[in-house]
Length: 525
Image 1 (cartoon, one colour):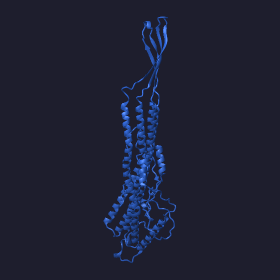
Image 2 (image 1 turned 180 degrees about the vertical axis):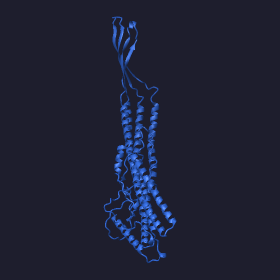
Image 3 (image 1 turned 180 degrees about the horizontal axis):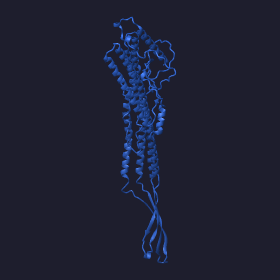
Image 4 (image 1 turned 90 degrees about the vertical axis):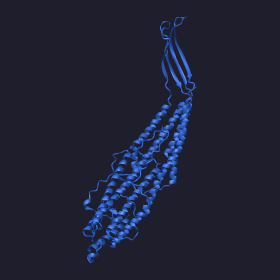
């Protein structure tokens, strides 16, 4: 970076010296003067950077290496504020546009935002509630049936019966065949599903935060570049007006410069609005709509190394969706086992005590206390739970096929994400290795020609704008590349505000069909 600054300062001093010579020269006839001899080049004079000024924060522009050449040693200077540094050249300052610097907001890292989402995103609490609900259903399924107590009276009448037989009884069903254990196993599988759903939801929230973070980081870089492009357009407009004043430019030239400046202003406003929109989306995913806006710390160019074949295998083998499909099959098997045990009859016990007030003929006294007991079972003669067994077998077959469906669906979903990743990667490599270096070279050639009085200053500005426009497209490609990378690393789980799926559902929809993209997929050219 210091070498680039020194190189840029050397170019700046060279241009400034040539401009001073051209402005003082009077030997050339008026009819043979070049346009650059009479134009006033705002901001091209060498400016001393304030050593006490704070360096620009979070303006990490993608590297733009200048061609190597010997440069004179220059003293180290601090980095210029955003929008005033470009290839080592300090951009001109507009005194009318200068305003006090806003108060710097908080700086956020990706890890901080993800941790905040874990604490505040409501879907994670919903998933935790599903776990507690499954635990409650498991507990309820294993409880024994309650006993029955009651009153029983027989031959209740007067006369010799003297009120008949009156007393009480207790009745209890004894569950046989391991039906309670089978029911607990069903809901244990459901509880495990709920825990897997919670893990999947955590990944979904973290991935959604990461995607929104990289989109916002790309928007942050784009706003900085658009600000510089607007400044270049304003400088070109000022130059066109000065040339018009000295008769070296016509009305169309000034109007064209005005249109270009207005276009860049609209583009800057659009970039700022997109940045605000993405920030609101990020805050909503985290679960804190009132999250103060600030600066995102990060570097879009620190790209991970991706092995597409290995990542595809990882998605197909280790995706939470595959794990949940396996648990669904285990649950269906447990339900079939419970259905087969259901026709095993329970033992029905009933016993009681009665006071028999009928008088005995032999003694003339009441019969007194007497007891009774009953034992019975329900014979599965007609209803052997055949229908539920058939339904459980069908559900198990369906759950088995769900595993296959999930594998195919993940493969189909991942193909489009891999395509987006490869397209963005090709664009990034083309910008980084070909187009941006070529634009840098063109800019330097125009600058040298202008220094040798063989090119006009507007051509230098056009080359500058082209270079920064390529930087904008480069940032958009980096943003798309990161979005696809996060989706692939996160098993295609992206929707951080989608409610978790209840564990009782057999067929789980893969909801991540519309992955967020950046500011526009830039094709490699």
